Image (cartoon, rainbow, N blue to C red; front, top):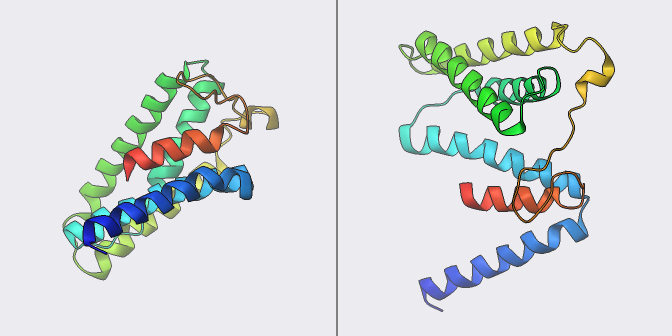
Length: 167
């Protein structure tokens, strides 16, 4: 079997597994696994291409998710603008982290973002933004496309599509 045929066979097997996963596994688990797989791609980019090890990525993922949910739920922004606000907040946080950590080397470069990420975690943990427990739940709006986000059965398909585009 040649290299090209092997790669096509592997792609076909992975595609079949991705299509069958929501029927075999719990759909929310599939969604979370795909989200964390995208999260791991950041490590691949940073360690593989640049050779830098950083433990602060969770702060960007968490802050973007928190800001997105908050702007959509509390401010009533459309979902697309909420996502853009979350990405902008994570980018600003990344600029601050980078400004503080970029001049460090070795283990110091890895540990400074971890310490900053822990600070972000405790700020989010202690924040009183959502005044009631009901404010912590964001609705699932329609984002366009073939699959609606309002149904739990279609979310894994959206995540599979997004993940395959990002990989």
